[in-house]
Length: 558
Image (tube, rainbow, N blue to C red; front, side, top):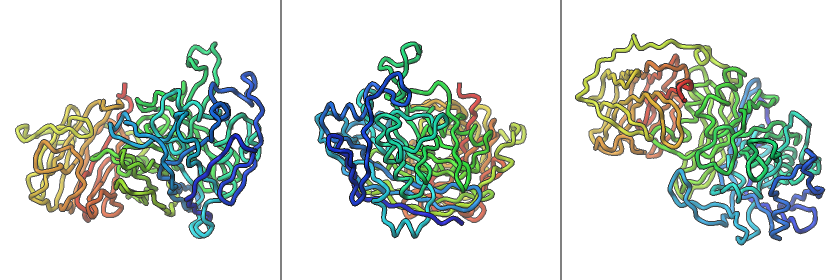
């Protein structure tokens, strides 16, 4: 077991670009070296159309990089066991309210208008972390959330001044903490590198990148720069190790460009080899599946801005199911903005056929982030996770009483479903080529309604992907019309259960979400997943909210 440092941060950081080269963060002082003017013809000093430095000089203001999130450091592994944790950063919200396109809700965003207050909370540095926590917990890697530095609510033009040129670490070795002058306007990268160096920890963060392009490039945007959502990785000595440009963008991320080719990014640590991608990437074949199945990556650092969407796409629910289905250690750092639906971070891993998890889930509007620490052990790809399976449609009983079925809209998809009528039974429900079987035994409150459903088709709500799913869910109330609406409380229980389907793909992700003291939670004991079958043997550990198998047939996405 490797013993290292756990981190905790609590104070703000500000930088005055109009003053001298000193940057003060509580008791710690960093010296910045002025960058010489950028040169569009010199790759070491590229010019983005708008840089932090030129923007702030033009505005005569103080630059800021607000943290509005649940910072999550997690453990990956492969060889010695290691520790990781989720960080909570306090913040000062000085901004405005704006509707996020995915939620339609009011949320606070960080200021990016020139006339707003110029001095606001910014990125924390390593020296604000409490030494007693560092010495006690022993974390080796920390993961920051997607949009954790900038917040939400951007256009292509408004985010441009906050972006930095991020070089390819495969082309030149670089330590931004020790040599910030090698590239122009890389203040954020300097701070992250120094954080890693001074805490002797691997740092994975998400930030915005701007890479200049020439008009001879037919795909070069009108503003002469590509803008990317980027994951960056720094080693314990501050070295810049890896850069990933997000490949699968949300429909509202018009301020970022999609790379022409997908990045398959890995980095080495003393405790295993890691891959990294972010947010929506988890739903598609590349880069996620290629990294795991073809490059044998079993540790993933995953910054995300994930909207918690019950009943099937809650953050802790789906992210843990991905870890379970792919047999990986999954280090998830999510934004913590409950008023906008963003919350749920955790450490997820598998042990043989069972789930391991240390997570934080709190949707209270007044809730803050929380520290999560746990120890993970090496993960090995199981044979059935990479073995092609044959369709088993011939082995499943396709008979069903059509008069007892109903349609239920679950996370935007129209399921064919059947109501559970007793405390035990063997149910079969089909849609198109998919048939699902449920054998169960439990105790169900007469005040609660459950349905068992199947979906086989294209998910088209916001993002498009082909989905097959066998699901047992609790309805929001006793009305069949409420089946598919979120539910968080249950007084029922599931004693035993077997759930399976004749999926056309080998990629199936098992979910078990229950009500624990009225709060959705994961179950890590009493159930397992093996050969595309979910089995509950000794109870579900709380009132069942959703017990499901979600299968992705990536070949049918187009």
